[in-house]
Amino acid sequence: MNLCRIQVWRWMVFAYFHWLCVCQDTQETTRPAYLVTIPAVIQAGSEATFCASLLQPRETLHMTISLVDDLHNSNLLQKSSDQEFHLCFEFQAPKLLEEKILKFKVEVRGETYVSTEERKVKIKPDSSMTFVQTDKPIYNPGQTVHFRVVTLDTNFSPVNQLVSGTF
Image 1 (tube, rainbow, N blue to C red):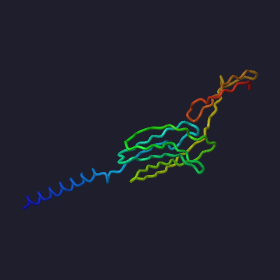
Image 2 (cartoon, rainbow, N blue to C red):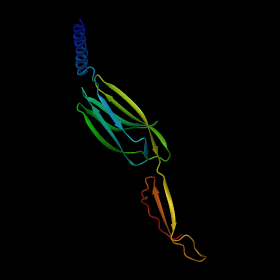
Image 3 (cartoon, helix red, strand yellow):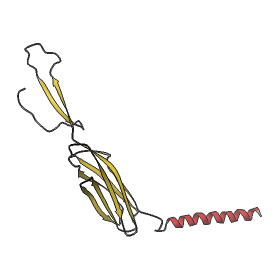
Image 4 (cartoon, one colour):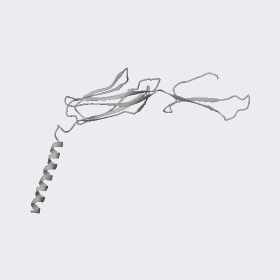
């Protein structure tokens, strides 16, 4: 009698797992997936990069990626595909004089699938730091002071700007 119960349980477990496997392979339960990455903080006016991936499309999907503020909507990408892809794109960040929070909007649409996501992205204005260095720490009265001035941006790269003259 116990042997009969074990065999019934085996068949029930087998049927259950077989049903799970069959259901997971049908088109109705597998949905497309997408991933879009972008830095949370972007330097104003700089070249920025975002990457987009589309997985398991079961139909032609239209992906639209935009950078949105109160007045403007800048389309960064419009791509239609029925194939998987993993691509990175560069775009010019807007030139702003003050810090601003924009919305990074991703919309994926098909005949049977619609998804929209929004995330915040901070655009920081260009700022620079100026360093003044003398050739020695202490001067006596009447000595000529020699110095150099270096201006660096937020990535510690020299600002491409020459200043000449006598000070």
